[in-house]
Image 1 (tube, rainbow, N blue to C red):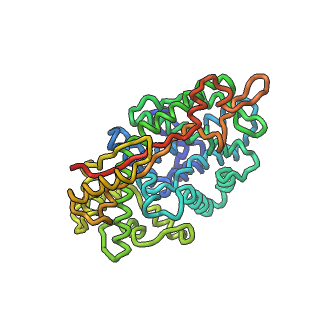
Image 2 (image 1 turned 120 degrees about the vertical axis):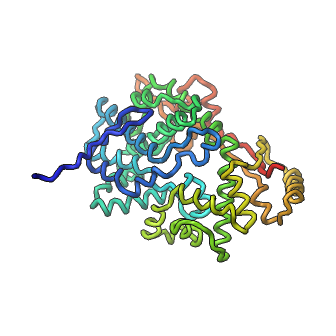
Image 3 (image 1 turned 90 degrees about the horizontal axis):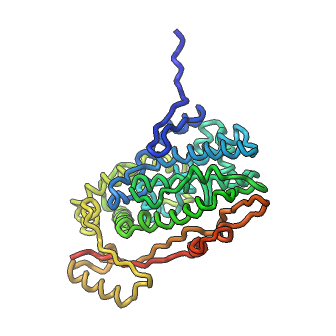
Length: 409
């Protein structure tokens, strides 16, 4: 009997797009790789499930969704006469599939506390280069496009721009799982209106209203989901907790945790010492390592570590006050003094529980890249000029909200 062939042209069922076909064996093998499978255990929107109970989707969901949208984009552009070879198409699918592979547990929390010397984008590139060695150079074109070094500029714009496949998926997906309907953008319509002029990605004028809805939807999703005040305070508490654990570990205090987690707690990680071995250890780290350790730390002798752990696990979060103006030093000192008396903490200990910061929301940043509208007469205009909606122009300005956090009584 001949050996049974493995069918690598699988179909995945996605709750948003329906059936998603894996285009070829190389993509299948990348999805099957342990580096990519780790994304099943990384939350897409961090601790947002503490606000929206349904928001338990993962980076794996998102990456697969992005690949599906990229397949649609390639098909649309080919239909309109834009030449994209099979090799280029596969490279685009790989680049968007792996664009978030470097994310650590709970998305951005680790970047702001333990692995501070290197960004998730740099780790993603590191992963892609290691996978390229393993797959004997088959990812070289994808990496070139991902880094923006490939001559055909529009291909990089499909991966990273104001209207890329990443944003078109995460807004729709996060809207679906959180139940925040305002983010339900029409990604299918936007992709159907894509075109390429002078090697630049443009949107046909018929898609202008969908683009307006996209910008407004992005603004609302940031305030209602990504920058929701409860989600913000939960992530800040997680960052402070990990920072405390890191400081205790450096002082020689032994903390419970997986071998991979302890490695990052006990060592200073930066771009300079992020080796292949570090990458392999990072690949073993996910949300489960963090949650398991936090549950154990509730009974730790260190009062700060114990209290923060208990508050996060039981969702007994700090109070957060938002303001359009910076928090005054007088008000901060007043709150700090009251809470010091209430909890009998030292100034250093209390700094983990009483702090100020700010969040910023800029729905459309035309200084980085533009959403260009292509008119029938051949004219190309930035969305802010092409739109008759004055609020689109207003949404190019960053909005900053300041806040102070402190324990409830």
